[in-house]
Image (cartoon, rainbow, N blue to C red):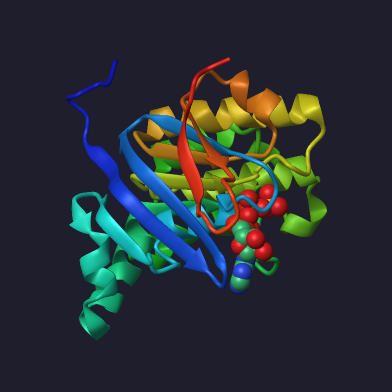
Length: 240
Ligand SMILES: Nc1ncnc2c1ncn2[C@@H]1O[C@H](COP(=O)(O)OP(=O)(O)OP(=O)(O)O)[C@@H](O)[C@H]1O
């Protein structure tokens, strides 16, 4: 059952996206604070393209409705310089992004990487939240190190802490565990799900790994490639 008392973070209806000749559509989606959703489907079905639409970096081709934290995203895209500036603000404040490869800044320490978003937003890092993230993700002994001195798994955990540091309402993760061995990937995903709940963030997790996704027990949006000429359709998938 949907926790109706929680803020609706993401709401869309009849969203259409296009990149070159590639087209996708999402008939409907609603995500509340603290909820998680997996996006899956075969390679090339448009998972990253969908994440770019949700992350406000790709302009929708059309949308019946598309709201992030109640803001009309289509109207912002159509709103000229003022809209672009509002989009940039929404992107910076409302969205946390976790990339497949971590995407940490090499010249900043682990602690500085984690504190980057609050700093760019002019916020003071919440020390209690910082400590919670660092402890849960097992990063206590690595805070002063440069990212290059960490293992791939440790870097991904730093990327998770960084994405959650400013407690963004929406966290987007693009194949965050693709570079990890199966046991490490399972642990990292469990941590990400738990910390998103702690943060009160809605989480959209992209993964091609349908077996691992099924094991998480969260709703799944699956990209289905139709006949030639039709857009890929992202719809709900029954839990295995
Ligand atoms: N910059 C671009 N310009 C034109 N077409 C693109 C661009 N980026 C991706 N595409 C095309 O869009 C389609 C969807 O790509 P996308 O990367 O979103 O799929 P994906 O499901 O994330 O794939 P994978 O699982 O392999 O990462 C593909 O057919 C791809 O060739």
